[in-house]
Length: 337
Image (cartoon, rainbow, N blue to C red; front, side):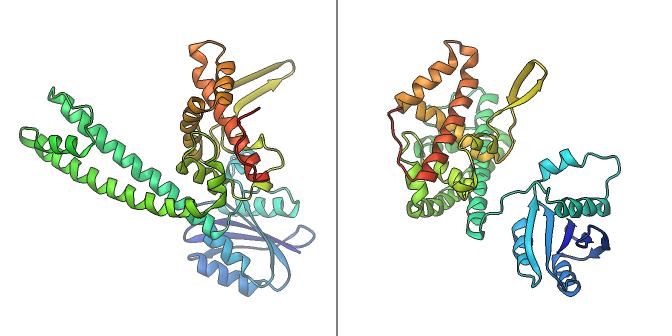
């Protein structure tokens, strides 16, 4: 079986093909978009092969197109973070990277990344898009509050209610600040309308998805956290152990162990940042509503205020493990230990 390594870019791709003995039979740069790459491989391949490429933006389209080729038996997507650890070198270019990928594939040592189905990829995209729009809403609100503070104006408590926004639009502001206020209010109204539209679409998906409904049996977990976990976990049975979900979402500490010392520092922050953020936010709500999680949080805090953030991350990691176990078994949340 041939082993093919692809160093993929938007307008050029380096292709390295190894035979069944690991010898290079073709080393070529294909110019053009991915359509030219697919046409080149379809024309050149005349025997079974396996292909590897590094994950990047738009990986799903290329993965699906490669899987449709006649002689392709397997397509792997290499994990970019783990590849950097393997390929730290002072000599790096597209041709060398394609050769290294092909050799890793030939040796069956590719650090792979999970490729979800098309519908799951689209679901992830809309979740990430909503987070971006929410960030724009927050930025507009912060700028409006700063605009009021610069003029010494005290804002009412319910500033973002309909009554508060009407007050904000009518408050007297001189010169250019009035223009800035109008632009920010227009942007806030537009982005809030976008949030409402995207949220309506996500709610329709969440109501029909049994896994999201299952995770919402956890006290304090809403639809946004549940759907993000389900979308990024994908197939829950691909995890051999439930505690590995903590590392997948970057909620475990970095470790530096040597001889008799074992130093644990801040969390790795690997994996999807959106899910990690939602899990930590959801952990606060779960602590307030679940005696079991509240007791765990108190135990991790050890009656020390400086450990509250670490304890919260610990609860979020345990919450992720519980969610994975629920997805694997189909059981609802059980409050008793």
